Length: 118
Image 1 (cartoon, one colour):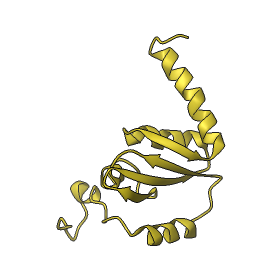
Image 2 (image 1 turned 90 degrees about the horizontal axis):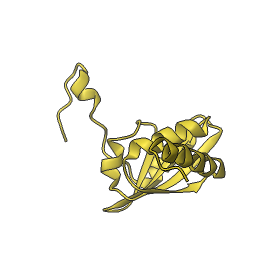
Image 3 (image 1 turned 180 degrees about the vertical axis):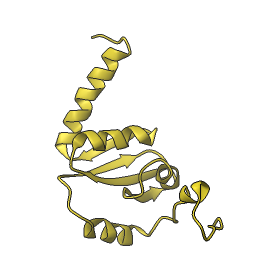
């Protein structure tokens, strides 16, 4: 693990702690403040890779070397969709249904913006 200097600087702030075992991470996740939407997403990328791409408050559980489950919470489905865009990996949303509906709307909008009218 990299040495973290006594006084934080820009480089040190990018260092994330090692992933916690899934049970400990879930306990921490459930103890924090409630949010209107809680998403569970399966991501086709290694947990360590995804941990570097998303905000610290998002909990990541490794499934295997190439897949992980992401638990994200927010008071808006738009923010959850933003987090998913930051993953830069293929994913499947298990819940909530409001997020799935929002992603369908955004997929249509982005497809039109890219010139794929249909």
